[in-house]
Every structure is written in structure tokens, then in C-alpha cells.
Length: 145
Image (cartoon, rainbow, N blue to C red; front, side, top):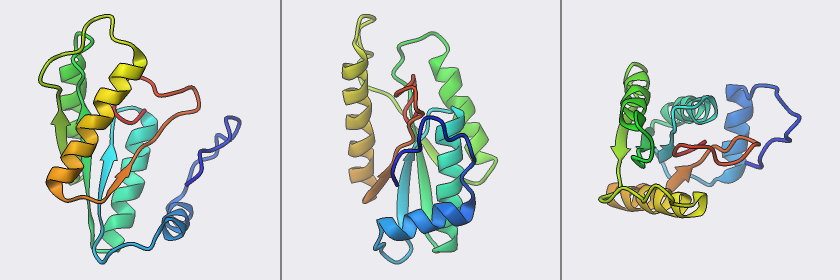
């Protein structure tokens, strides 16, 4: 699905999302999707849309929340995102690097670390599809925003 125009603030509805997913196919029967979730509005909306679509296909979503451990409170934020998803019956996992990045780590190195964790978990789970949400201002602080 192409990124929205920076000036487009209209919400994406389930039917529009489904049409975009159809264009992105073909999909296997009962597709399993991973969605990178930061807890921000964009990645949460993506996860909810993807979950609705996957369930209609008799598939499942696994939300992946990356906690880089770069900021105080990031662990609590990750746990809150997982709790929001659990309340909606969406499976979720928190991914943490073995070693926390240095305080001076660049955005690029944090992004590379995040993508490495996401792809490794997809491989472990046998999930072929990883959805990422990015808001127009850039990558933000979390897994998918």
C-alpha cells in the first residue's frame, strides 16, 4: 500500500484497507501477518485494520513491539501496547535486543536493530508478511511509527 500524502488526514476504512490488501496479494489461505507496533496511533490503527482483515480471511495477526531500552519508561510503554492489543484479542510479543544500544546510537542504527529483531521473529514464527506503519514525519520512536 503506498504511503499517504502528508496532507491526507482522512481515515482509512476497513473496506479501503481490504482493497489495498487484495492488490498486495496473492495471499496464502489463512494468512499470518506480523505488524510492527510502537503503541502510537498509526501502528495501532494498522494493527487493528490488519487484524480485522486477517480474521475475515480466517488468518491471524501477531503484533511485534520493539523495546530498544533507549529511554526510561520504554518497557512500560511496550507493556501498555501489548495490554491494549490483548484487550482486543490480538497476540503480541515484546522484542528486546540482547544488549541495549548505546545512548548515542543513531536513528539509523536503531532502525537497523529494530528491523533485524522484527525479521528474526517473523522467521522464527514462520510468518511471511510484515506490515510497518510510518507516519509522514518519519520513523518516530517505536517499532512501527
